[in-house]
Amino acid sequence: MPVGYLITVALVAVGTLFALRPVPWSRPLGRPSYYFGLAANELPFAAFFWMLLLPTALAFAEGDIDSAGGWATVALAAVTTPGLAVIAYRALGERDRIKRAMDEGLGAGWRATLDADLAGGLRRRPPLARILFLPILKRRPDVRRVANLAYGDAGRRNLLDLYHHRSRPQGAPVMIHLHGGHYSGGHKNSQSLPLLYRLASQGWVCISANYRLRPKFQHPDHLIDLKRVIAWVREHAHEYGADPTTLFVAGSSAGGHMAGLAALTQNDPAFQPGFENADTSVTGAIYLNGWYGTYFGQGPESSPLAHITADAPPFFLAHGDKDTLVPAADARHFADRLRQTSASPVVYAELKGGHHAFDLYHSFRFEAVVDAIEAFTAWVRSRERTTVPKPKRSVTPADDQTR
Image (cartoon, rainbow, N blue to C red; front, side, top):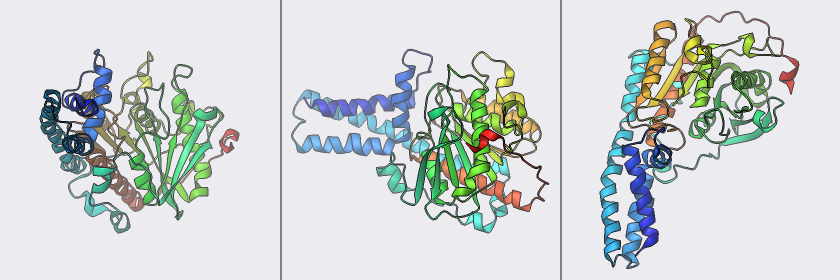
């Protein structure tokens, strides 16, 4: 009985089942369904090649398929393959679905309005070799990561990583990203790294930051930390080639919740204790598989829904329709409310077959999202260039900003 082969195939089979039919998080199998299903859902090609096709070929070559158990394992691999094909088919369709979402949010002719220099840097094709064979590898040789820069006084929870092109171009726009983890876990060097490395390779300065966590800290402590990151960027990012007058804030899951709050409470002194005069305005917001509700046991003011106003910045939202932690209906509701009130564009892309935390790997789904985010930010930046700039108020950095 080829035990190693059986275990490998069984893992893929279970992951494929949970990818196609995820179990709600609140049910007994919710957690294993999420973890097993996520990898199979985002990496169907790698799962097929590395965990079905290659092990099956090796098992035959080594003569291990010589028993009823061996043939049963081959049959399980054969049954699992069509499931992976369905998963792959759904992921391959995301690019067209996201394009329709962009047309709906920005207008059908939005590409024609992009500045030529910004449009020229947009990627036309997904990185096939990386998606098929190295989907977990995040780093790029042309991008430098500067790790563990302090932006506050809360130790490792107030550290950030900065990503920039090794040539260090000047005047770079900035993207700040906050990780997820239910506000009680997670770390900065984890989520949306394909996005950060991609933008940094195109001349951006990107930030990924830790923040204080539950249960010791509560809302608005996490939001205050993000505001401190924005203030730190405005004070220090020029040292790495950034021009922080163009600054987008992004987040995944709880980080998306925080990014949405930051974008909708710009320069609000209630969330800037000790650095009330710092400029915490943002150019736009990126909300990925986010949480839209209220903070644990707190009132409606802890939800981004409570802070929507007509002057909200442009938003890009992406959410999977099979997310078992945050229903897609919540994301749709937020997008509708934002469109009803905000004068800025709102792009909402609902990902067919997408699970929570779809932004972990170089997958066809997330690479399509990354390309859309790059195009969305190019559109926003192009519009900013044609808008008469408003007079800037003077900003007096607080003492603790210089830490």
